[in-house]
Amino acid sequence: MRMSAGEPPWMLELEGEESWLLGVLLDFYRPLVDPDDEQPEEPAAQPDGPGETDSFAFWEADVVGDDADRREEDPALLRLFPDAYPDDPSASADFRRFTLSGQRRERLDDIATVRKGLELLETGPLPIGADDLDPWLRVTNALRLVLASRLGIVDEVSAEEAERGAQQDPSDIVHPAYEWLGVFIEILIEVSWGRI
Image (cartoon, rainbow, N blue to C red; front, side):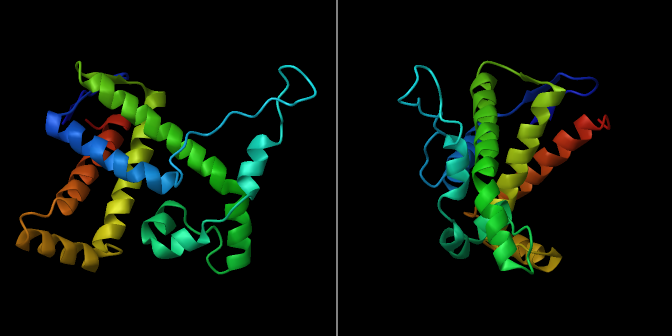
């Protein structure tokens, strides 16, 4: 992995194995963000006027359904969509009910940006402008959070235990992917701050 320094656009280069790994991780991440794995729908046209749209269609997606069961079953979801009010479950549920759909849409847009970047990387270095960097940071950070939850990493002690476990199991690919994402995030941040 290499990224140019200086002013944007920065040129990102990934090895073939790194692009493959990031693609696999995106495939794993997307269903966590969108359990139905469907693209957000455009508002439907109203029957009483040609070309008019239902202005409440997107709002309806925000208030219908609750992911409480999925969040209890998968700690990665709690890391991705944490409680806004940890000491007030009712307020957290209300906040989630009104914001979860928007959070999902933003994460799906970020996934699409990174996926498109991976496709462009097949033909050469990828120019990443200052505005394009945030989706890459959000996606790589979210992927690292998911892998941390799979590895049971919640603090320094559990991180060290996960590292020891990975050293004893050469077939483990989750911990190396977690470490690689950490390096990738560090490079993205340092480039954006002009430290490289």
